Length: 277
Image (cartoon, rainbow, N blue to C red; front, side):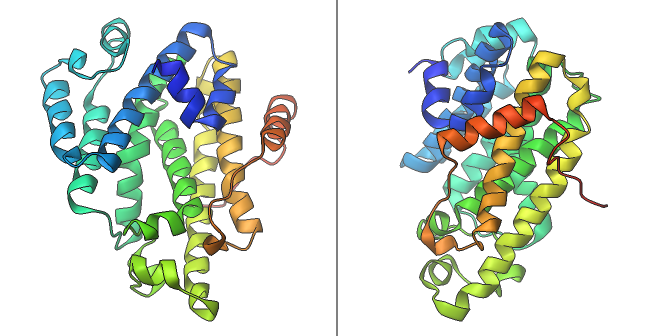
């Protein structure tokens, strides 16, 4: 499957936003997305996922991007002179999860995990979008972390059914994934409260991310603003729905995504996250 097809199939919110990017930048972003998706799929679906990802780590560390089987990736690395260290961190985080599973214990561990699987993507995206990778790093990392926190808030039931718990243990009274998946009545309240805390932390990360948008060239800036607002809206909808995770995954309709995208383009200051330190 070509990178653009991977993005269209698996990244509906970002695919919509990517249409605003400059063409070459959109192609490069799709290629990077396809690499990240490949690593994620191997970690989740392959019996020897950790071993396969370890091979990618070795190749990336040795500056052999051609070992990653995604069309155009090696050429992208050479043309953009892409620093591969963040991708190595992402791959190692995925390999560890494939090997050991994931039971988050503390908020610090949660944020470290989100950096490993998503903040790193923000780092990799900076030069592809035309932003200074040094000045823009912190905001880019914050956006990746915010998006991953949104994923976690949205997917609590699905993750618990797979034996994973991304909600910090202290926030959910040390409940196991099985207990979270099968909780009923009042037993769900601490889990709902924890989801609310995840969304609140995501709001802080989105607010931080917005401070760096001015570093991105205008056209690409529009695309990233749209992507951020679409992702953020998922978490806000989870919260508006009472964090009722047992009802399954919440998603935005195509019409809702279009409305949010238009609002982000026409009135970008409206509904911008603004969290006090």
